[in-house]
Structures are given as structure tokens and as C-alpha cells.
Image (cartoon, rainbow, N blue to C red):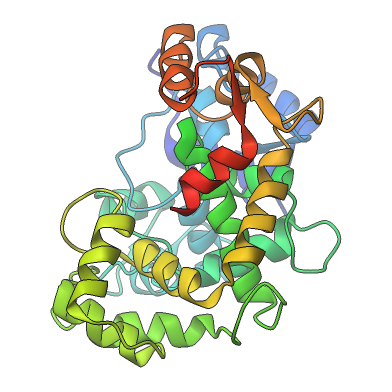
Length: 341
């Protein structure tokens, strides 16, 4: 239900108990705040599954019943960028400084003045369709959510990062994205890892994309893609480009966004054997009884626990589609081969 609380009120209250400005608070702090602000039971039942001992700002806003417009990136990141700009801690920030911070996270490409805005006004100014996250977001996320400090994230930690970034994890794409992000994380934090056939410099990859995106529309057409790949140290033929389009243009729009481009570059730098081994390890997490297979029960647990809830019928349909020999189990090795094709 609609709330009488404003976004500014909720933001100020949350900020009081988030001194490190991480856009996350403990369950204890959440319980205290929700009681202080008299959250309605209906709003609290919005289906937010608190896990891992923290609540994000975006989840908190949802529980407060406050409506937020569509944003180009996660509300948690928007809040962090605003608070970074609030150097005097008085809740009044220069719009230009806030947008400058946000441009480190996404490519916003909007012109703003130096007017002073509250958080709610700042949110309204940058509202708009989703944009690709820049790689430094993953760098920061890996630092923040990686418990062991070695630059690698476990699957559980990746899920926390994706929850924070408000990237839904659902369906088989969840598995593919999780695993691709795992390799991407390695590329950023450990470019000399034995999984890569050559040292991979993700900053160079980003520069190549940016340099070749001549019309600044955040996507590469075939000509721009070929040029960017050459800058990233590859030499693709026209046939290669057609093949890459068939394999990596995930939304079939005929162009490559940064995520799709990164997947192409990483695939070229990773030895197929190492890739297979890493993917098998990643999917092994869902194989709870170590049988080498994922059963319908295991798949259902994965797909109904993370991200958007899938109905029983949807999980059944997906399973039937993937279970090509109809033996009621998914062979993880076959599943990985399918992904690597």
C-alpha cells in the first residue's frame, strides 16, 4: 500500500544507522527503524527475503511503501553516490557533484547545473531506463562482498553482490550470468590467473569499447565491434563477427552492449579446458548430493530461492526443455557443454 512517508525521510533515517555509507544495515537496525517509522504489515510482507544478516536501502524503501521511479541503476548505488557528494552531511548536495559520482557507476550522459537538491529531487533528476554498469562497480563489489580478501567471490557472495546491485537472478540465465560474472571478476582482480591464455587487461577492454562506440549510444554495431576487438588484440574476419553475433548477442538486437562485448573478449582469452573446469565447479554448487546431476527438486530449489519466484509450472517447463533425454535429471557436464557451445 502507499505510504505517507517520503523518500527523503526514509533516506535520512536509514543514513543515521548506516555510518559507513554502504547502503546496507543490519537486521537489528532494520527492526528498530521499521518500528520507529511504523511500517505497515502489508508493506513488510512485500516478499522481501532478508538473508545474510543485512537489509539493503532499496529493500528498506520497498518495506516503507515509498514509490520510486525507474532508475538507470540500483537505488542502492544512487544512494551511495548521493551520500558521497554530501560532504557537509546536511542532506543538501550539488546536483552536478552527485551526477559526477553516478557517472563512475554508469554512463549517464546528462547535463545538469550546480543547483542544490535533496535526495528525492536527485532521484527524480536521474530517473530513466536501465544502463549498463561500469566495471569499477564490480571491482568495488568484489572488495566489499569478498570475505577472504583474495579477490574471488564465492557463489553466495556473488548472489549478495547481485542482490545489492538489484540484478535479478532467475532462470538458466541466472546460472550463466553468475558463472560469466565469476570469470569477469577474475579478469578484473587476477588477470594473470592460469584460466586465461594471455594476460587480460579489463581497463583496456573498457577503453576499446568506449573508443569504438563512435556515436556514444553505449552499443557497438558490426563495424565498431570488429574495430574494438582489433584494439583488444584480436583479428576477427566477417565470418567471425557473424558467428559472434549468433552466439553472444543475447537479446538479438543486432548490436553488442558492454556486457556482451566483455563476454566475447573473455571467451577469447580463456582456454576452453579451463573454462569447462570452472563452469563445472560453479554448477556443482547446485548439485547438493554430488551425483553429477541436477534433479528437478534441486533446480526448483535454486530457481524459487533466488531472484523472481518461478511458478512450479514454469520450472517444470524449463526442466523439460533442458532434460533432452527425459530421464528426470540434468547432467551437469552436458549442461556446461550446452553453455559453452
